Amino acid sequence: MNIVTEHTEEITQVKVPLPFPLRWVNAYLIRGDNGYTVIDPGLHTPDAEALWLQVLQERGIGFEHVEQIVLTHHHPDHYGMAGWFQERTGAPVLLSETGYAQVQLLWGAEQPMSALLLKLFARHGFPQDGLDEMTKHMVSFVEMVSPQPQVTLLREGPVRLGNRVYEAIETPGHAAGHLVFYDGEAEVMFCGDHVLPQISPNVSFLPQVEENPLGAYLSSLQEIGRLPVKMAYPGHREPWPLFSARAAELVRHHHERLALMEGQLSVSLSAYDVCRATFGDRLSIHQMRFALSETIAHLILLEAEGRIRQDDPTAEYIRYIALSK
Image 1 (cartoon, rainbow, N blue to C red):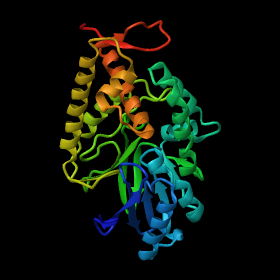
Image 2: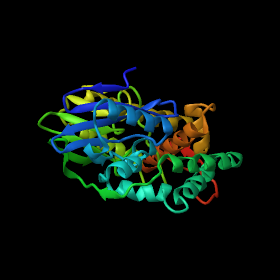
Image 3: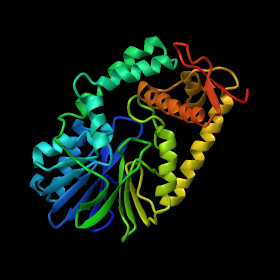
Image 4: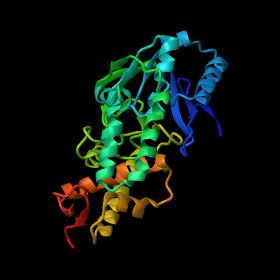
């Protein structure tokens, strides 16, 4: 596996290691006359530090040559090294306002999202004996996103990456406040995790963030898929040219997943029941967090479309059943 790939004279892909099945996240170095832009520098781990020091040294890039750190979204595997880079470079870290609000929920004082998410999981049938393990899992990310950077808010519209001006476009679903960066003249896109080749981006429901993330994601995919793209640079896997076809494929995938889950609800089930029926019961705690959050997102959309309902809206624990049954 090539750890570093120079795709053009300006764009270099760096595969930053992850301690998860995904194995790596793509960071990008974009060279410009004023220095380098780093997109999504990765999760903060000793391995990631060592890799970046090696990559920069081999290319003769000093920390003083880094002009800015730009984030497609706030997830730890993209955001985690931002503070480390900022401490060494003094460069601004650019993130959407919605993304920054979630950083504060996830890793701010007392990490309020952890309690909110565990309460949500409990209402949807997650076993009580797993909640302590899930709590430890959530807390473990704080170290991997520290030190926290000072964030400069990045809004939709023109943004300079290297010597070219891209359009920052908000693309909700995988992460509220997620941004892609599109160069319409060159037909190039840095798409973060909004559209990925070969794998389906996770679309999770998080309390107090977005009411219907999967609905927002499908709408965004249809809109973004209309843009002409000759080369897309994703957050995971390899850059590829067939962006619009993949966006349409992801829309079909989620409609198939919705139909599958609806079919399971001929009897009353919790989201946890549906999650295990869909994704299996041999998931790690890390995988379960995303699988259950994604299941809830699908069930919320099915309910919004009038295809399922809560079996007893007054009950403490939420169970669903298909309306056709």
